[in-house]
Length: 248
Image (cartoon, rainbow, N blue to C red; front, side, top):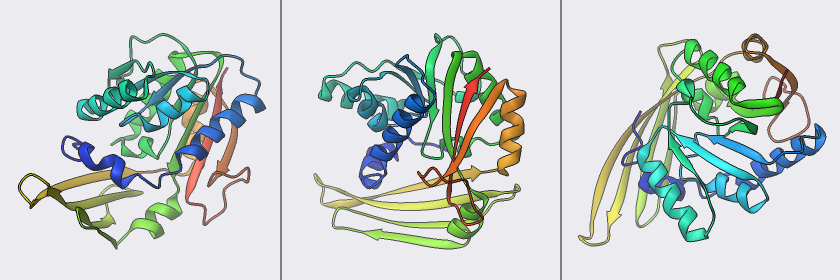
């Protein structure tokens, strides 16, 4: 998966993303489990939108992302907002060389982009090694219901004057996976013509109990598993599953 071209329109497409709800979730869990620090590592930080909001809410944030083009946009945005946001280009499953943090987050179902069980397990292990004792690891994933019923064999479209897309999702070859084919048409204001951008994205999820087993094997206590930005436990039709874990 490449975000080289996609990064230039990412913020436009994520305009309605629930960033404030993710910030609220972090604050609630910090208070609920009485973690006093404020050093936070935002993995898969993308263009920095969530990182910057967390900084403005009192956290000392470091961002990590695999895409250099996303990080360029995050750096530009942080400079424009006048905030300090250290940024590093790394694969979350190979995370290394950073100090320990009080919180580590992976939001916006970014964990689902990992291509194998090994990568998920390595991510959990490396997150654990970069957390202070008693630190919190918080992340969300697509549920099995969302993968099979929210995405599978569905087509989504969007059309405005300067940007439009066709997004088709279909079952992947691996278990519990989905593949997304996206075609964007973006207006080049200099030429008056539309540029075509083609993207292919892959996501894979696993049963909740499998995540729990992997987390415990990595050394985490799984404190809470909730759904859809609520305090309620997941049900069969939940779409987004949240995990709050503590380093033992």
